[in-house]
Amino acid sequence: MIQSSRISRGLANLVLSLVMVVLIAPMLLIINVSLKNKEEFLNFPVTIVKSIHWRNFHDAWVMADMGVYFKNSILLTVLSAGGTCLIATLAAYPIARKHFVGANAIYLLFLSALFLPVGLVPLLFVMKSLGFINTYYGFIFLKIGGSLSIATFILVGFIKGVPKELDEAAAIDGCGYLRFIMTIMFPLILPAASTVLMLVGMGVWNDFIGPLIFLTDKSMRPLTAGLYIFFGQYSTNWTILAAAVIMVSLPLIVAYVFLQRFIVSGVTSGAIKG
Image 1 (tube, rainbow, N blue to C red):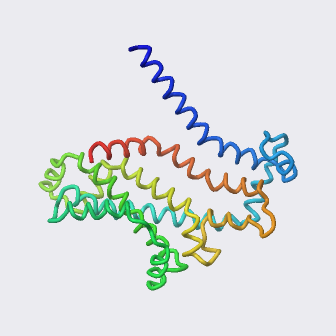
Image 2 (cartoon, rainbow, N blue to C red):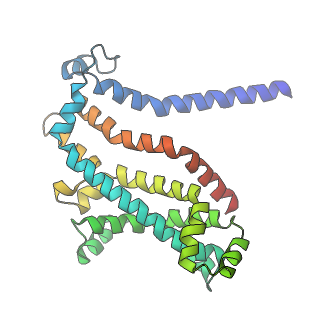
């Protein structure tokens, strides 16, 4: 029995190690390429860098005017993630507490949206009809609408684990409905809210197709769409492109390092309590 348990644990560790290598290897390869000059990359594309060229990062920043794209990415990500978290919190609380008739039906409607495919052509038609093409608020509206389902699902599961006695005590003390949600309930669901912020933020920050379609003005596009400038008609400078990819990925990595404790607890608690 003990021998079988050790074998199972060893196989599990082996599989996890292989998965880790598969996930980390592409990032290490990109870092390696970003530190090479163009000649070294063309001659030895997969070998370890011999002479580090930090100038690739400077050239990538200047060539793509990444300062403008960086500002756009922060604006779109913060407003989209923050708006989604706020609206989802206001929707999840009455659904979790069943404050109105048909709360379960509304919840199932949110869940069904998780499995529906996104049609770009109908979406483009709707955005154009509303005058949302090539506007910041239109793109933010699009991202909030597309993220509400998963955000509400996570928050409803977490709110169900919060004792209802808090609601009753707040009502007795004269605490208003919105005040209770924002000042008492929201701090309690902060782990789940952090999960929502990170998931939505990652989706907006990493979106490549959306900005190319709905933000036709290049000065309004985020960092990911700005990477397209490095693809030439006849050739591509892969070392500078790799440096740009590293700079685009770095903010998300830093954010995850600081929020990982809340994200893990938010996902697991929401799944168990839901």
